[in-house]
Amino acid sequence: MSYFFIENIMDHYKNPRNMKEIKDANSVFGDSNPTCGDTVKIFLKVNEGKIDDIGFQGHGCALSMASSSLLTEMAKGSELQEALKITENDLMKELGITELGPNRIKCIALPVKTLKMAIIQYLSKANHAGGGT
Ligand code: FES
Image (cartoon, rainbow, N blue to C red; front, side):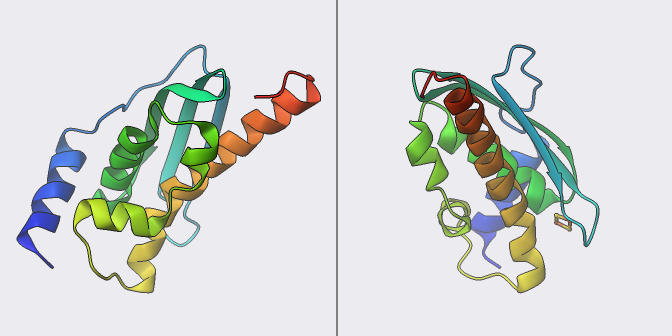
């Protein structure tokens, strides 16, 4: 485990970016890691197919919370289709992690999966309303 990785994780864990509820969010989705019970909820404010604002709330290990924080930074300002493409590997690269065991990958997968579901939920609502993205 590299020093850069530990510093980066602890920075995001202690000073989480975008840890907030968005009252007028267009989509809110929460999920949990069934193996440990850690939770992440993501709030999206979408405008013309772009993530204008994003927030998260959650409770969990340093890796899941730091990943959530970093993920919101990566997704903010992105087109929805671009944000959908963010993977666990992208987060690992940004955090300076070269490899993780399967149990720890789940910590990073939780926010990635939750963001995807929040976007899919938004797109599905927009399509049903006939409004597109
Ligand atoms: Fe639960 Fe990391 S130990 S998400």
